[in-house]
Length: 184
Image 1 (cartoon, helix red, strand yellow):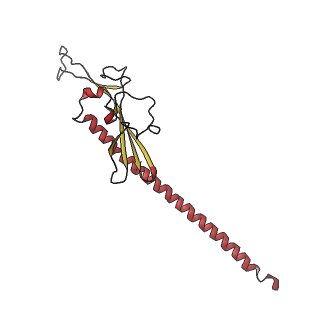
Image 2 (cartoon, rainbow, N blue to C red):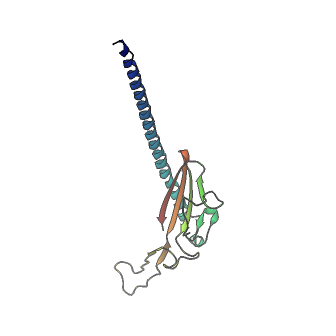
């Protein structure tokens, strides 16, 4: 029976090594899950910051510095294009090229950089007067008052073209997020 004395020690060492390997695997799996959760939080933060780009573009379109007739033609310095680009893809677009996008702020307090580009949804530059050339909303300008008077003169309806605003947010850990909005 003397030959069996060291066998228990060898078996316990093997079990100890197996348990150590299982513990290391569990720690690695847990830290990987935390990394994924952290990356998702950065992505959500970047997407939320995209609203700043959309709001800046909305302010620019509706702002007093631009007259409606000026929106009939491209304004590259403001990253405004009077026609849509059918090949526009936010993920392959060169956001950092000259006059390709408007940087609204160098860095937000949360660490993101936000850029936007505006496309008027028209197939040709110029006045948006045709539904065949532009995606438009039509506002009826009834001069008849309430109740409608059948012989009252009708004003020409107002044609309001739609705009597509695309914002790109660059966040921490190379997070990139895109947000789009349609407006008229």
